[in-house]
Length: 342
Image (cartoon, rainbow, N blue to C red; front, side):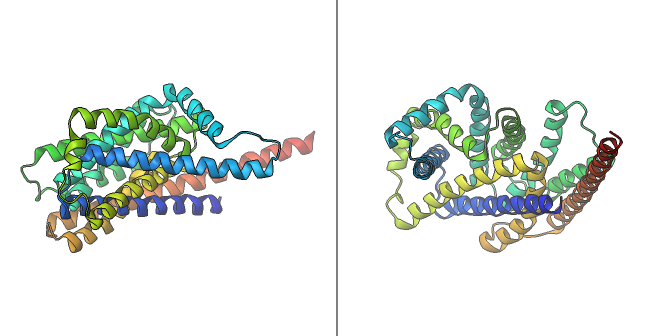
């Protein structure tokens, strides 16, 4: 049980690092280069995802081929086979891809419009939407404790208070971020369901989701002429821009992988909780790096309130784990006694 807790914490820490790296690299791209072409950024990210996943599949196949010398499938046959396999899974993953793709677009657009501290403050309301989704779509026998409800209220109200004194007139950014939170909560639930019902791994979900989204994003970028404006972008051929652009896409890949891995090994609530803890450090760091917002009473009190809520949630979860561990031990002892009697 202790090893399981350590593994769960380690998975959450990886997710927290990837999330921070993606947020700051994206904000750097938006702020320094004034780049706001979200569709092209998502298209490039899905392209990177497909390339990395395909290379991984080829390397994995070559390794298995060396271990099983009887396999005669070529690399080209492998690619075709893998593609056909992904197409068969479309019916299962298309609803997830639509939810994720829309949420990702809203989130990136919102990040380009509002400051990181405000973005992170409102992003912390994710745990509230996860809470609602779990009630509406979760297990019917799911028990929700009073401490758990209090922790969600603390975290959500703290997030709102933190940004209370900094809201500007860009209503679109806030609306898009709230939509992003709702769709993120839904996609986390769907990812966990796909893992439990269809045995989708985090890697499989990233791969198939990218294949689903790539043609859609390409068509949208052509119709909206985003692809044309991208090639006309004045900083396109600057090394600094291409490096920043590529880092955002690469961090996006690792963030997706870490998100699904954390969701499947832990729960959507673990993602939401990790969001809140790492956002405290991200907020302070963003104030120092970007200097586009100043710390004040509302921001400090709101972050503190969210931290208290996160602490209550963590304490409640630890008590639940200990309770389940005790129940497992008692059940095992009862089974042993029955076997001895027989």
